[in-house]
Length: 226
Image (cartoon, rainbow, N blue to C red):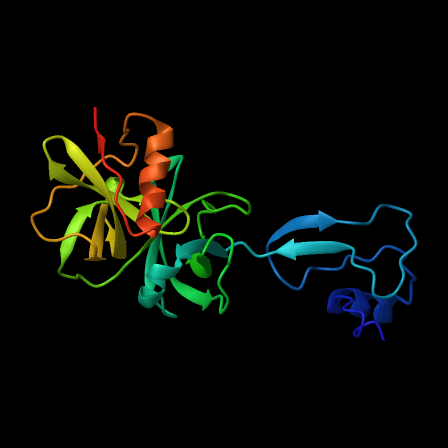
């Protein structure tokens, strides 16, 4: 019965040899890790099925990241990724995709992906923010600076030069993003000039919103830049 209660063999052997009753028994945890929850105190009555401690093994951790739906085509189980920490750019850990959520978040239009990373130095801690870089194969196509993209929540927009200091909003289809660059699958032709700052200002914020909303109506609003 004591063995079923995970009482250590040394305690049982000593009890058999001495016949002395000992009221204090040391129970060893079956796994190593950190005590992340303690829900018991001295003198408390213990009932069956009560959870006394939670021990968490942090030698390998999960990192959850959100990807836009247009990036779904590059996501697959086992894909390699690197994680960096905002407070320490020198720390770079390598891991793989362990799980891809089969459903899309309709509010943010993103997919949640779970990565698994080794954490021998305990650099990654639960609740921490981190940057995830997915390793993808090299692609050819039209590339623009990532900063040129404006995300309205419903579409991706860039401002294209129409000449004479006039710029027009253009809806684009974005492919792979990496290294501060974005692949454009449709919406911008080779040789066209785009505004490289996503915070590009027209005469006023209201005109900017009108310009972007005009895309959905099939027209283009023009505004002079600073």
